[in-house]
Length: 298
Ligand SMILES: Cc1ncc(C[n+]2csc(CCOP(=O)(O)OP(=O)(O)O)c2C)c(N)n1
Image 1: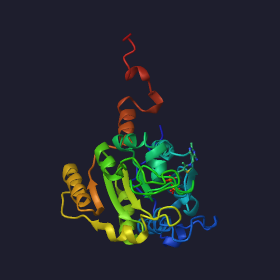
Image 2: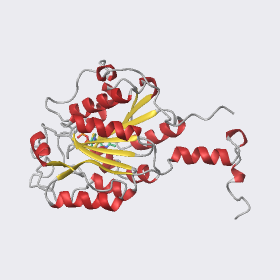
Image 3: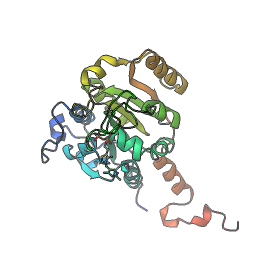
Image 4: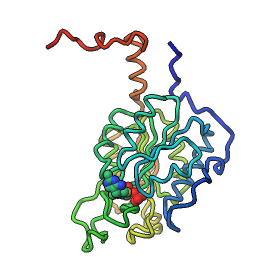
């Protein structure tokens, strides 16, 4: 049997600058002033700080303006189906645990059509980094409200404002057991890059919510509004989930957006557990379902 692939022990290193991670083959697609540029800048910086070899890097996305991000990254890339980046990334990571897998996508992609997948990425502790590019609107389809839209946002299909309570991606991910949860404004590239770097180095499901203004379809959540509302939360025990939730709630009740590293813990990832299982049942060569399943049961 071949030696098992070493899960992210990790990062085949190169000495690259952020610009070396930029794929220049695709012309710019985003509108002038779009916050998604800040996400890209932060990701390129994080990649350079780690020094990930692009040959061992996979960028996976769904559908949306944000989901175009892999086009601009020097890596292997998969632009998949709307809301399905998580399951595809899961397959990539389980098949090749030696690769660094980064998912990017919008709030619509992740929490509307893809919402059913998010709890499972978290609870299974899939060893990927998930960057949610959260502009509180559907950008690509020209401005419908999304699950993170504020109730007061007037959009094409909600001209009098929304009627639904928005989802809070951070609380959602804390609740479902993500092992790394962080948030930043995309315009704060220093913090965003740091959080992405730490998230990529974290062994487990790292969820990073990057608030990203949409100057074309969201007049409410502008870059200035995001920047002014963000407060970096420090001082709580980041390994304590209840403390993280309390810190997030306290900031929200004060009308602020909590940013920074909010929660981080360690537990086995799904690829680790699978490797252990294969080891336990005798390796893939001797793989025998009968050793795991009691076939005598009706
Ligand atoms: C199955 C399916 N349903 C709907 C769409 C239409 N659609 C494309 S992108 C999108 C939402 C985009 O919003 P978001 O994911 O928040 O990303 P953004 O464009 O704002 O970055 C929708 C509804 C689609 N492409 N496929």
